[in-house]
Figure (cartoon, helix red, strand yellow):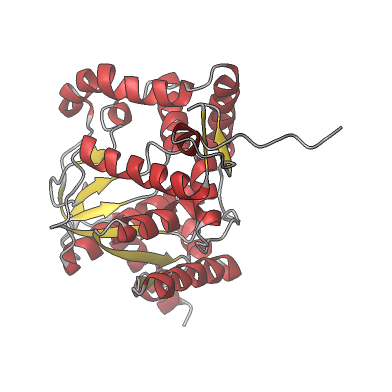
Length: 318
């Protein structure tokens, strides 16, 4: 059997030019060459920023990077589009995994001519994540998430960034929406939006890649030579996340475009209803941590309590 011919670039074909596409996206019925794929990808990022009023070019944006493809692409493409962006990386102290992730972030910084802000947990809190997870109940992922959010908020405020941008993609948002709907996590559903406005001491949080799938983001990264690690966190407890992603992928394969319709129709038709009831579902009021001054549901925040426990243990052990 002969090799299957690639589809012609849809855009080139419309101009009377016969040029093979480098990628075919069945959910969009679209085949694109390298030039038109990059244009299409970047245009949809700009559309998401404009549609959800995420930020403009007068604002300073802090991109939360992990070294993975999504956040690396986000920093690269926002920089390419002319936004005032810098990156912030947290070295979690997870052996060579954290070292490799940081190397990818530094490599991208060299590529685009910017130096990322880096915080090391072992210096800031007193220990890396493998040790810190033993101090609290819950999975390493839940502890990591709380620590990351704390430092993103703190660094953004201290360094004067208006916005924190994360690399969440369409697969992330659709699978998370499905999980929260099945479990009726109302307080999460009421905040399930690509933009979380500034409030109660927190900076604005935005997700400019919500119109792109993981597959498309990976293709953009590879096509443009963007450095990233494809290793999964060795401490990650991602069974539930992968389950819901697999369910959404199965549905998508049966009915192309389901992920997009599911998520964006929710934003259009259901989110306004849940958002209006947000205050009824949020548990407790925020105060200010008496140690560090960051927003906290308790007198002393989670991270400051962790620091104190680590310090106490080290003092007792001599």
